[in-house]
Image (cartoon, rainbow, N blue to C red):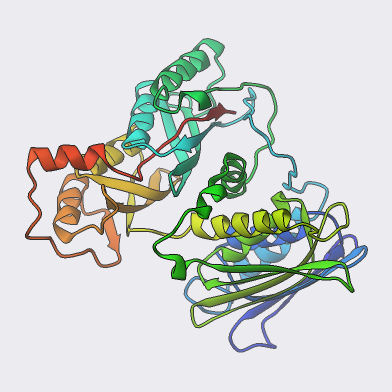
Length: 430
């Protein structure tokens, strides 16, 4: 079916809005549809995927973040319009894994990609360098997993509000950031590639690709003290139909389906059928897949890699620590100022989302103590006093520990041995 047919049904279910998508089948089409839904902040509770041969027929049960059906006409119209556009000739889907970022004269921003070993306070240092070079961070997605970290940061020139195009200035940015990244893992180095072009990749898709290429999933082979909390991923072959059946059972969370389908797609597997269900805070996902070459998983090595990569994809976005939301007037250097305050209070950021809406900065940070411990109320009070009451706390901080001595020695050691800070030793700019 080309053009695709999208049907939105708000009558058949009392609990969810049903979205049916029928289309000609192409590689990556399932990920495109799911990506549209998560970009609209929709939660997929159930889904039935069927895509054999040249056709694609999927049914999604979706709700909003408050758990309610979608009744807003503007949002319903966006669902249909965006899915139709995403499956058309102007689709944003880009199957290749780009390792450089393009800079074009017509672009309205530059993109900096960071990937590598987590390091205490590096996000604060990166932000400070960019601010000193008159670069404004307009958006950023930052993830940490195990000892690795990745970020996609969009920046503009402070004065023009557009992309930096001057070659000498780009070289200064490269030199300063390269110098900053000369740390313990010198073999990974730091590099910046500048070329022409305007195509951009979805930031969360790119983060999955960066961490997959970096091999963060390989660290999952180590003994984990919280093994019982790990996702349960199994792979078996259905030989009669030449499918590999991937089954996932884990704690449910937002964007889980996007993360798993993104990983299967980047591993070059095609989902032919799937059954997705989430209830009582638990998720069940079953995928019937083949490699793009048409074969199921034939070796134990292949099956183990798929399991490890899916486990990593599920864990990357798990929100560790107290959630802090900051909505305030945007200004150059805001991210540098906020992350400096976190560092001075011995906090480490495990995940962050930085956005700009008009003249307002809307930022979300997940923070933990420098040694991975929970954040106490005294620390929260301290950073709110420094940042202001625009900082909202989501979740319950721990009460202060009376045994903790806040001496200069304690602070020094806390910063020396922080296991999870930000970040990283690979740099690309587009």
